[in-house]
Image (cartoon, rainbow, N blue to C red):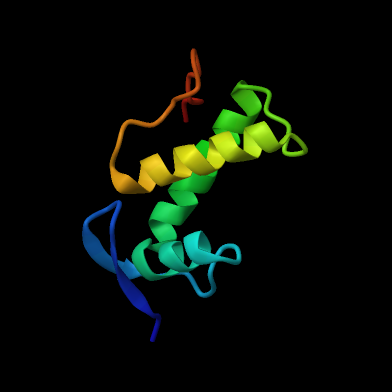
Amino acid sequence: MARTVFCRKLKQELPGLELPPFPGKAGEDIFHNVSKQAWAEWMTHQTTLINEKHLSMMDLTARTYLAEQRTKYFAGEEFDKADGYVPPTE
């Protein structure tokens, strides 16, 4: 049976990640408090931010910005959206 967590973002008990998404305190916090579904939604949003804002993952400022946005996203605070982004229609 899959490990479940009470997801801080989606406010319900859902399957959790199999491993922390990255090392350190922040990765452990996400592992224990964020569901697979919420993490997948963040990854999609993060990709949109990277693409639409032309961020380089080689740039420490861009990585710091994304970490701040990730914290806000999972804390239920206001987080940045990609300006002018229109999701594709099905």
